[in-house]
Image (cartoon, rainbow, N blue to C red):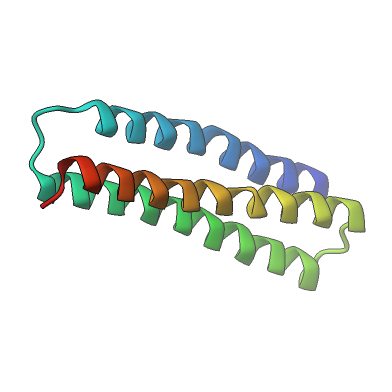
Length: 104
């Protein structure tokens, strides 16, 4: 059962991050948005990634404290959550580049 829960968590992360990446790409290619809307859109995308990181950390913490998962599974889940951090940082870099092109 623990393995199934961990796999479902990894599936959740795997299924939700690509749409966020696509939305960021669509935002970058949009021509008719005002700067304020662009700024809020990047904030929402970054907030989403940060929320997934927080959710992953909290579920991982729960598993470490309450479930008797094998260490290799805990490490794998931790790496999956840690893998979202570069994506969040990359979104921040894209925001700065986008601001230089479209911002005030």
